[in-house]
Length: 449
Ligand code: ADP
Image (cartoon, rainbow, N blue to C red; front, top):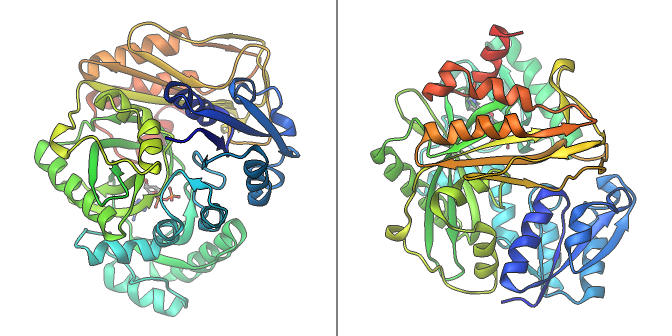
């Protein structure tokens, strides 16, 4: 196991990684921007280095500064968390060149699966169903039009470098296709510095169901069941749960096998997520792979009892997986609500600022992963997510009633949050019945403006 590692991230995930390290007896170095001096990850790490001004592009996204910090502090490895440089193949490659272990897959895995068109082709070649669409990148709108006519409207035009729900455009017919194609490409160029796009059939009212996988560096791959992440706003996840209320044992076996096949298709290692869309007939289609730990990983931890961050460390230090597929058991039910500093009545505008009073929920079956505290000032420069509330119970009903209780207890004063919005979702009769698709929030907001 590593002696000392650097965490190339901030916020709750930096803290989550520090916690795992403390339990493993691994020393930690935090990096922080000038805006994050008071952040809990800086206070709880064994050492900390300032890597630049507040903006992410001047600090957490500056690979050379992070590598320099790693060399000065003489760490064995870097954990990238999620976001920032976690899916940047060049960063992983620089770590490899500097002989600093990147706690994740290798740079080739990231390069291959990070390009969404190449990822589609890779898994399709291994027999995993993908959404009907283009074979690879579509360069000219005229070519795209032919593909769209063939697969049938509506189609979705997606950036190969897309992420975070951005870089996607829907075309309903041939008249709007050209306009949407050009818009998708120029938006992608602006947001990701890469205007390449591909085309998928738009799946009507799907569920987003993803599989957590773990793979060691010796070729062993297992899956840890699914997470249902269909509750999304603007293609961004808001509430996640495991197991999915839509799952059947047969479907889990089929999708789990497909997820393992997808990971094996690129000889993947470390933790990863295979994302699928599932239609109402329970046909499933691969949409993308995330080659990192995900925000919603705790729901899997709570139902399987497996600490995913510790597993990432074990795998990166060359150990073999301790479990075989037959040893993985999902027990009970877990739900996660992402708590954001935002104002739902102002179209979810970010609400940074000082937290004047803070009282997090607790008690049996409640977990809060968060870096905030009373008196802490949420900087305006980063993602608005400030906490994750995870509840677990013997069954979904119990996990839900705990979530209700926990959100009622959660007191955050001084800023706006989406806590009451989350509560209204989890109390919606359709959500309570487990009857929802990725369109849920859109429809919910039309019903309750
Ligand atoms: P990102 O990398 O930005 O997260 P994804 O490809 O994972 O993008 O898609 C995010 C969400 O967008 C999905 O969970 C789903 O709600 C919606 N989506 C993506 N592709 C399709 C599709 N072909 N049909 C319908 N919805 C889609």
